[in-house]
Length: 357
Image 1 (cartoon, rainbow, N blue to C red):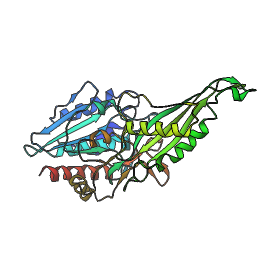
Image 2 (image 1 turned 180 degrees about the vertical axis):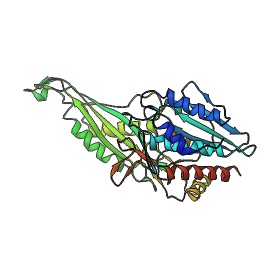
Image 3 (image 1 turned 135 degrees about the horizontal axis):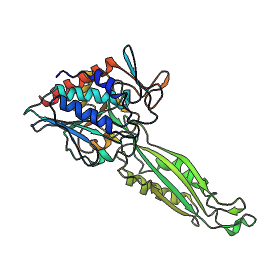
Image 4 (image 1 turned 180 degrees about the horizontal axis):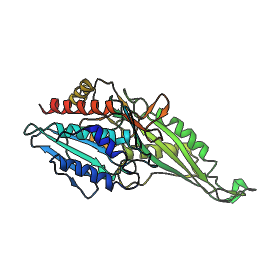
């Protein structure tokens, strides 16, 4: 069977996988079966297939879920339009094409691992235990090789004070007024002595207040307030390291009579942490040479962080997150160029041959 990645994109994009990935997963499993490859679906909903029996293990990962609303498929000359065309059914087609094109035999092993819920909680990726030597994560990068990305943490600052009548403010402890000290502390958090250093590729971490609430009555000193913060991290900061450091820093900036707690948002899966693969790693250089693109950071959080803890990892694929006109991925105008899909497939196949000898 000769696999055509563009034909696969044309079949995949019309499938609505915004709420339920079942039909899209059936298409993927059926396509692999038609090519003579057995695929399994594990308890977390991941679609898994492997080829080869050697020691060097390369994982090709992407996802089949898409963000709502579904955008209908259109083919316009060299462009496929519709939801998922670049995020990430175009990248999936490229990885699938390379997976089927390269039979590693005894030289190595290639695993295709396609997850069901990257756009939400990444419980599929969190359940994987693949022990790769290298990993390529399919996302729209415009054929650039993205060897690093910031992580994303989220948490809530909770301040506790004491109610009193607003006519007698000195008799209470105002938890809303105490937010002033919290906001100042957020501004100085990354200037402390033990702050993560500015990363060579990713730059500085950021910390942004996003949602605030507090108080229950207009004539009452508020006894509680909450502030949600968004953290875009850089290596080597971890979620727990960030939580403990920020709580201690906030305590220094808030009056002693105000209680301070900072808790990370509950998730079914670990937060997507920052990762960085050296630019001279064999995976990076092989894929960059084959694709002809730049080596740069990826600007969005991805499931790459789950693999990068164990092996050199890059994010790569056809399509772009945004172009000169604005947003592409997650937008009504989502599209992918068919030439990029074919080029990405060829580049990944060449990289597999290089890594597997």
